Image 1 (cartoon, rainbow, N blue to C red):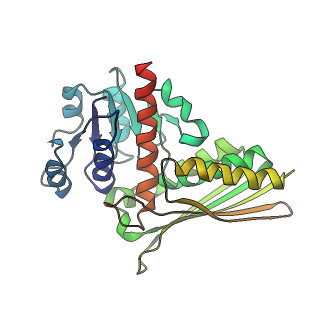
Image 2 (cartoon, one colour):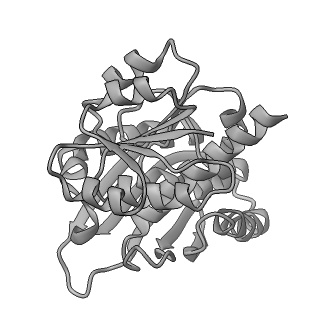
Image 3 (cartoon, helix red, strand yellow):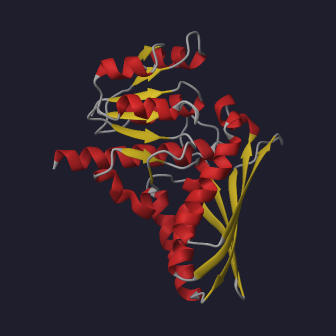
Length: 281
């Protein structure tokens, strides 16, 4: 299927590399800002490039569009594409579209045309919280994510408020918790830390053995598309569940600490490939 990426930052360029390596998705058109280093990289990779934004995407008549621009810009992009026969996958924390994580409700990629990947933090924690919600009645969830400063571009920094609110909304919808709290830390530490999400949940009726087994299974399932995904700690005490998720980037083009980029881009390509497969059948 023909693809396009809106945004030529770290997220968009890594996404382009993944699309080039896909068996069912074509090398993308990359739309970015004039003079950006990302567009120069995309040209060297053999991608078509444009500085005309959403208009270039409309003119290219593609099948799948990945929005790696900004939460502020996304609603206008969807407004332009809503009447076209296109799947739009939103990698910004705009909260537009159907919220999807591959191991939670990835089947929705077969029938929904506007998908939201929530956030990199959402992609890291939603698989774990899906297991928690299936084996207990959740009342409170707290998520704290830590990401290396070097793996966070300007758009992500500008969208921190949207990141917190959209991730919190997705967590609340999934777990039905009465209260949710999401915190995000951008760490300037050297060496740069791996992307990490720490989860604390208060719940009743915890099935401890089923919870532990479920965590092992879901980690294996996520590693099928994001090999650096690990549930590195899990604790259950009384009505309190704690878990730590670490994501290490495994692709040669990304530094190991950029697990935030890895998890959301890997999810995006996985969902697009599922969509492509459903269209073939």
